[in-house]
Image 1 (cartoon, helix red, strand yellow):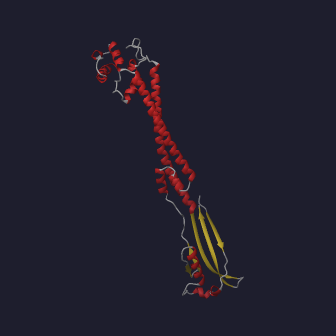
Image 2 (cartoon, one colour; image 1 turned 90 degrees about the horizontal axis):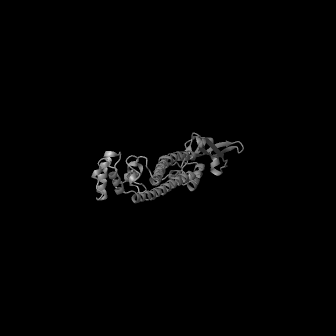
Image 3 (cartoon, one colour; image 1 turned 180 degrees about the vertical axis):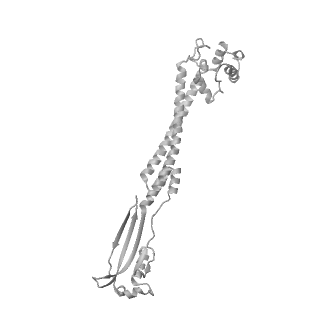
Length: 301
């Protein structure tokens, strides 16, 4: 909403000496030199206003000084760029300090949230990996495959190293199951040993005298569910950390858009137009012409 408030100040000043000697006829001619009131105003303005000059206007019989619009305007683009880099910076630039503090606080909070959840995710990942490393055994799993006479299991040699045994087990898995054991330590390795029933016999709580080729799809010790619960906790922490980074981006975008709007509002609140003129008017009280200053200020907002 834009309104204009015009404030007119009329100061009646009686001008002495040579100023009062100017008649109507003297103003109808182009002055050879500046009138005394002009000189007086010019001198005053040089001292007070750092040398702004006045203009003598014969047509309207007055001395006029008109100032340009002094807006103190700021750049909405600059404000948006500042907040795009550091949320709240553009609002601070527009002197909207409360909103600046809010956007900055949100930014700090989101990064703190990211750091906490990322750290918790890392520590919980270490926890479930330690559980798996200590409780799932490929030799136990391979022996179970061989004892249950799964197709291809005759090629398994339990006396080889773990990596060689894993490749032998993969051959059996490809013929009997939907998934094969990934490389040790891989993210998928820690996922599949708890997620898929075909790996259930490798867990320390599994009783290989009970679990067999007929019931392995339904046999599941609570140890495995507990392990998967810890792993899910780690994933939840990472999801929260990822959400934090996404919200950081949103905060930057929102702050940039708000900064552009806030700077624009700041500019609209600041538009001030000022002017000053001195009119040579006839005073019926004085019975002569006198110089009357008129000051005008218009504020748009």
